[in-house]
Amino acid sequence: MDDRTPNAPTTTASPSATAPAHPPKDGWYVDRRCTNCDVARQFAPELIAEVDGRSEIVRAPRDADETTRLHAAAYACHTRSIRHTDHRLDPALDPFPLALDETVLHCGHNSPRTAGANSYLLRRPSGRLMMIDTPRWSEHLAARYEALGPVTDVLLTHRDHAAHGRRYADRFGARLWIHEGDLEAAPEADRVLRGTGPAEIAEGVVAHPLPGHTRGSVLYVADERHCFSGDSFYWSRTTGDVEVAENVTWYSIEVLAASLARTVPRLTFSRLLPGHGDRVHLPAPEMARRLRALTDRTARLRPRPVDFTAHRW
Image 1 (cartoon, rainbow, N blue to C red):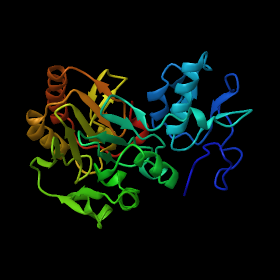
Image 2: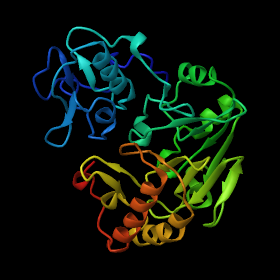
Image 3: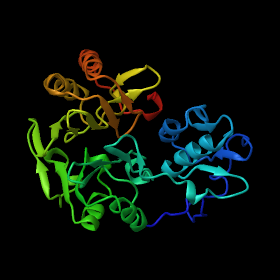
Image 4: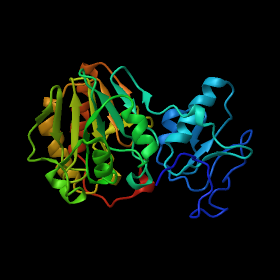
């Protein structure tokens, strides 16, 4: 499937699904397909807010910069729910891949098959790149990412984000990585991480198995600066801190607590880049302090049923 036109009509969405749930703001609205994944609010928090358990446009963009950020939110949205009553999105304002710093780019175009997870490109000093988790599949997008340089590896953080891994890896001629605990989600992987110890998989890139969210969850830390955490932990705007998704832990919150206790003392990084939830950049000592506190809080948690509606970003 090649999705180049986010507001193109589809055969799967009824007119009611693509209608505004609330009155548009100067024509802009979020349609009823929104799953409250938080991705849009990460890119345009002053324009899009959580209202009644879903994203809503709270005001229209006022200048070119805000229009650009609203388009970033729209082109990242996995349900393509950010729309305008009078016109389609402007393809010239699709910013992806979007540089987050000199090393990491956000792929955008989040996939409905990964519940709208964020994915990233990591530049290496050689000029080659690694992809961490994957956006929606599109030949057009693959060519756009590859134009930045050869992609040598596709690193999957866990089973929930494995949907397009093989296809992107084959398109790039890259190696596909996953942990043995989630191998059934990508049985054709080229490299399989095993056990719970850290493993340097490329110069400056270390995989830290962190079972808990799923049995095979993994963190990838690059250059002791960037941590791609998958769904193991994230930055919460609600609490202003690093958090685990205790209401959406598929394998075991108790195993996750043990994984954090084992792994956090080994970690050094300053930029947190999760699959779900917000990103944050903090001084490395402050990040380490918050991770130690997260480890202590998680140790006090007890298993509970998965409940997406109870989660707070």
